[in-house]
Image (tube, rainbow, N blue to C red; front, side, top):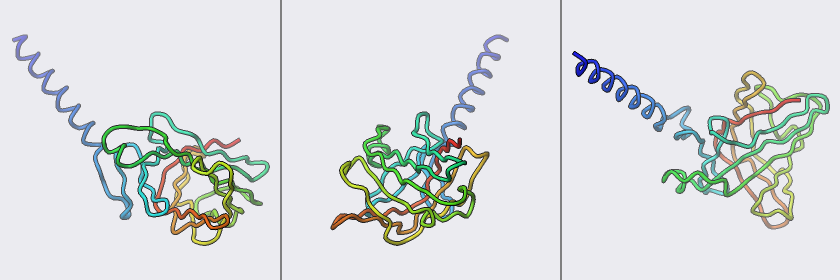
Length: 173
């Protein structure tokens, strides 16, 4: 009788583990690629894993409710490394924002005087040129979803174009 209980316990545990693992598989949401605990973002046409709020460790985006300014933080690694199970923050990108109102669902980042900075080029800040970035969701004032559509920044002859949808942690104060 105890062998049957052991077998049933083992089978239920194995089934539960398979369910948990399958919930981390690739799924499509509005044609944006979501894989595991990171989102896929394209920067200058190259795909990166962006480690947002579903990641075990992430960098939070910040927003000051009194001054109406903050920073969207995009901690990224090479997608090819993430697909192999190597989760490193090789690149840290940020978009500084300042406006006259708070971020909310439907806010357009281009209305907040965005300035782009990246660890790839720490000596330059890049000014907004064209495209759009929209907050498509905001949950519990702790999480935001941002959709980038050819969101372009430039400084001199160098530019960055962001495309994709990312889910990010948000710290409001």
